[in-house]
Length: 323
Image (tube, rainbow, N blue to C red; front, side, top):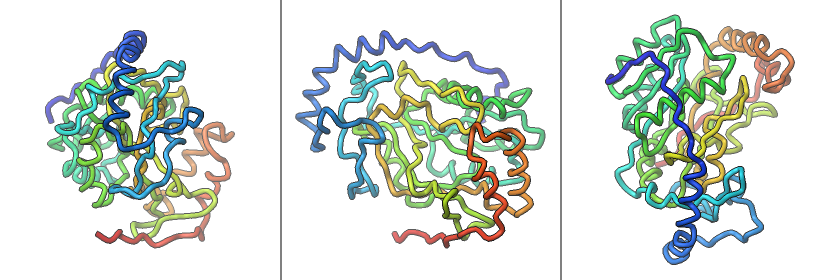
């Protein structure tokens, strides 16, 4: 590992005014360029952009966007000056991860898997009391490790923001937000370089599956169906773009909210979430923790919390995709 500094980096100031001025200057040229070069038809002006504008369509990666229509910032001003940042080759992929007391769980396997398809790994250790930090330092692709003296788990938006600022300080082209209990399927890992070495879209969504009680089955019912929609975890980094996390204590999105204003790609690549793959005792401990930090269901669903204790959930066998 190259750097295991324990100091919190100073967050970079966002120069939104300068960004927007540059965007307006190149907007007309960019539109003309896309009309001439892109084979993807634009959406009608009245239709939405971002994730809601992406429609299922067969493609080389399962699903692909049917539009790269103009995106808008929350303030309504168009952002189009990404042409020089978008590279179709030679992109650096950096995985970013927040961890706490993960040494006895799946962290070692996750790090080993990541080393096979990412360039760098950046980690924020949320005041672990076990050997998590040492395990992270032993990974050859961990280039930055920030160890917090006290946990920020109860202020998750601050933890996510710190992780983002730490990761972008290493100069990435793309960022992959990974938890310490997630494994990308082989197809996704093989396709990852192709997903980032292109100049048409700026984020990628995957399907996550909650493995339950082991690695052979995932849960599917009213409360456990995240695999029915896409979760964006891979995003291109634009210096100066206003990346902001919502100020929530729990269940904070993986990526800063404004990413959804950019053109994206929805794929059918799958990710195993192993957070519920352990023993019943492990799930009960997580249930108790969730009820402690969110007793009124302010940050999540109380019904879903109670469903954790279901002794006979509906489980579906995991099947590897054909090559």
